[in-house]
View 1 (tube, one colour):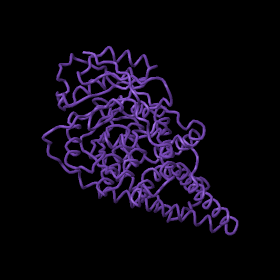
View 2: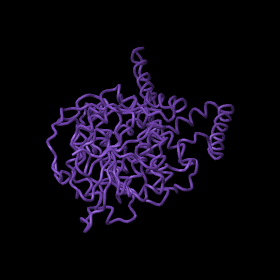
View 3: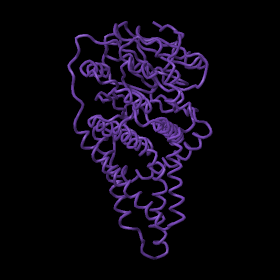
View 4: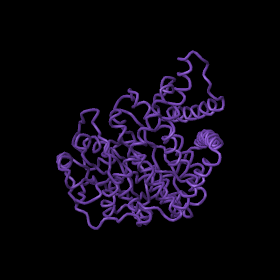
Length: 470
């Protein structure tokens, strides 16, 4: 049975202009803060340039040490696992949104995965959200059998052509009490919706939960350098950092997929920001501003890694550009975040951007400081404090990735640890590109291409396919 092609009514409008990345100007507070910082730096350089250089060095060391301590705290906090909740007497109505753009190759795999979701089909609705001009994907999806609860939703032409804009259009038709989103390459655990619904029904102040994202190729582990490092990075984030922050009662940036939300809370904040290219990170903090609490669940969604460095770099560029947008949006007005929100914003997005700026130069400095003296036949003169800080920072990062990899079942051995600094250094290339793109094309969406790992086999689906477990 083919799903109906649904044309949207009025779309959810997105957040207010002052809460959106559409507004690119600086507030008076941001101008004053930047001016004060720049003025102090110029004055210090004029009066005491050598003291300024040493002060910058000490600040960098202190920052590395603080980041390392924070990672260790998160590792310890993540030992407190999310609570289990009893199944409710009444399952809430659930809406699944999956935005697809140029995804004809992997759309059959997504439909196969969604068909395995174990949730009462009479309490379930789903929309495959397609752009009006994407005739290839529309043709591929229309030729496939769909569960009775899943239908096609067409987004009319317009800009910006981004995933959050498409999701907002589909959200206008959603009738579920709960909403979740999936990406084209996703393979969610069939019981994920049941776990999320149970949490929402027993915790009234919970407005969003994030499922862990685990990286694998279908039927096998990641094998290449980018695959393995990306899988370990995801494991550190979704198995350690986010559970740790949830246990500490802090807000955090949601993932781009497999976050589950209360529909009324989502609509109250205007849905997703169509002009922010990391609308997921922004949404977590906007929900927090409205008094909502964020949590995590344990049932994962499996994703494929980027198809090599040529696909990884544009994806990471978009993420970092979006993090910069989100930092700009949420520093316009700090009072709505509160102390914990400001700390969390700095410890997640701020630390990610700062680390990306520093990893490449730090590795280059360390290489030069060690190799140049050796080639000249003299002993390297590297400050012990600097080496200690870099060692502690690397150790904390390795610990986070290793702990996450163990929980996710991802490969991460000694060889991966030794190669990790090269992977971290690549983020400096991505953040440089992100800064240029932010200035020239702030709302352009660098789409990650997805390829099918296996040829899907799609049997005829019975009418209650949504109840079948994987």
